Each structure stands twice: as C-alpha cells, then as structure tokens.
Amino acid sequence: MQQREIRGRKFTCIPFSWSKGVPLLAEIMAIKGDLIGAAVGMQFGAGGDIGQMFGRVLSELPQRIMDHGGVELMARMLATTKADVDGKQVALNTPINQDIVFGGDYLLGFQVLGFALEVNYAPFLGEVLSDLTSLLTRGLDKLGVLVETGSPESLPDASSSTP
Image 1: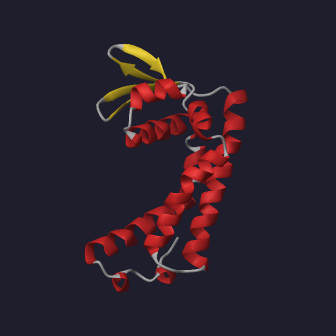
Image 2 (image 1 turned 120 degrees about the vertical axis):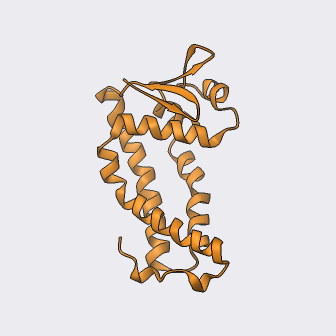
C-alpha cells in the first residue's frame, strides 16, 4: 500500500493482484502502442508542424481510451485507489465516486491515475514508457520554443534531436 498527497488531497493505492493487473496491463500497452505509433509517425514520417503533431496525439487520446474501454477502463485502473474525503475513504472504483472526488478537475484525475499506474506497474511501465516520454519531452520542448517565439523557424530541427 502506498499513500501520496496530490494537490492537497490524500490518496491511497494498494497494488493489483496478478490476476487483475496482467489483463489490465495488456489494455494499457495497447493504448500506449497506439499513441507511440501516432507520435513516431508524425515526428519522423510525415514531418510537419510540432503543434499539429501534439494536437493530433492529444485529440486522439480520448478516442484511444474509448476504444479500449473508456470510463470503465479508468475505473478498473483506479480499482484499488481511495481518496480521503472529509476524513472518509472513498473508493475510486466507480465513475460515480470518481465524479465525487474529481468533479471537473481533469488534471487531478489524471494525476491520481498516474499515481495508481506507478504503484501497480513501476518500474516496468517506467521502462516501457520511456520511449513515449522521450518523444513527448522533446515535442513539448519544441512546442515551448514555438509558444515563446511565435516562430516555427526557431524550432530545433527534428533530425538533430537524439531520442
């Protein structure tokens, strides 16, 4: 069992059993594979504008999640996670309880989801997802340059980046 305070709220997560964790891992890996494929294709294949690349990846993320079970998949990912709400433990294993805890705070929801994935799959997922993290980090760095300068010409050349 691990506990973490996220944005001023306490969350507790108990790792999945083998029989729950392995099937869920397969679903997570399918989503990860879809997103890495999209990012790599856009980064190295068609080239193009970094803003368009991340816009496309981010716009595809909800559909990828929906293709793999949507809200129910997230409820399964959070099945062993609880939030402390007014001194009571609220299980995040149902969409209704997630609505109670997260409301419209999507960032908090994804931060807690990341915590649950970390508890259940680190270091395995950390190693497997490092390629996506590297792509996203490079892309976000480029996007930051674009936002700061307002000029696509100021972006570092994608071919000079090291993975």
